[in-house]
Length: 104
Image (cartoon, rainbow, N blue to C red; front, side):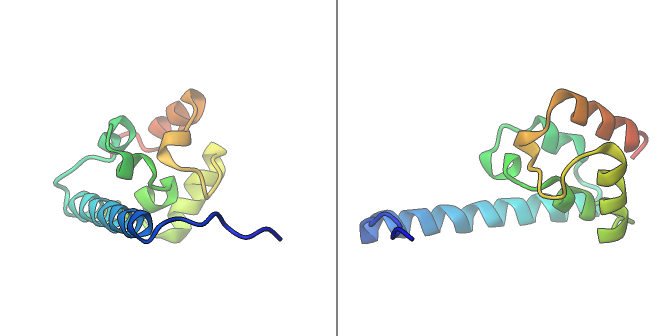
């Protein structure tokens, strides 16, 4: 098995800082979603890289009244992989998800 590419200490430090920043942005978005300050569709329309890379399952689980079981059931009904990210949603998947979550 080949070794991963070698990167400088500075590049590694920058990548780690970026990862921490993205996790904080996603956590903040999910917290605001749970508190009702944001709407789930904002994630689908977001231009923010950190939000676009969030998994759909995480987004659903952060909705009030939703947990893992309900999120997985919705993803199965709609035909979306449990590991699909927001940026990877196709137009048909997006339309089915919006129909499933209508009124939320």
